[in-house]
Length: 280
Image 1 (cartoon, rainbow, N blue to C red):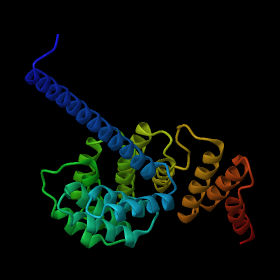
Image 2 (cartoon, rainbow, N blue to C red):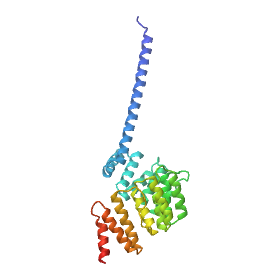
Image 3 (spheres, rainbow, N blue to C red):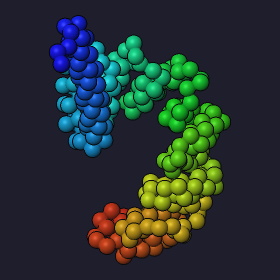
């Protein structure tokens, strides 16, 4: 049956509209896949790639998309990761000046400033962040700044808040313990290092700091905790040096001998210290 011309025109219009709608959906799907792919690649470059490679990658992106904030953030993060501190600070300043910048970018700028020992400016940056912006990273840095100013009550408050805002508080508990250690509050430091190791048993820095806190109280026995043979030797060496600094030289020499005997390889630092004591 032959359809009237007006019906043919209408059918053609419907078909064209359907094709147009389908093409639009395909285009959006392709764009979504491309964005997801780019986001995954960005994450890989920020976490897995070599720092220099990551910097080069984000430099290319930032050059290709000079108005986009994401490549600028990636470049700033990569520069800090590559230990190019001054350049990292400059890059984060550029990010925070971007119209789409948020409080999280200011926190990253403060972190970069602390890494290059610009404590006063880091404090000013943190003070300018709205108090309603509450994150682990923000309070961790606030605690570090308060520590640097010897504002102990503020530091304790910020460390406690930061520890409550993360599911992996081992690192911040270790930092808090080290703060207590520098103040001479050795028992509190010991408790915090123990808590840090309960949260993160493999954190060697906390193990070493725990030994320092115990040694400062003239407790020269290693605590019961998981450790490798090499770690045990290194911790004995730390205890030995602590004992010697407190004029417990005989105990220090015994600990050095234990460290040399315990280490699975030649432990030159401990052996050299022992030779020096025996010769002097």
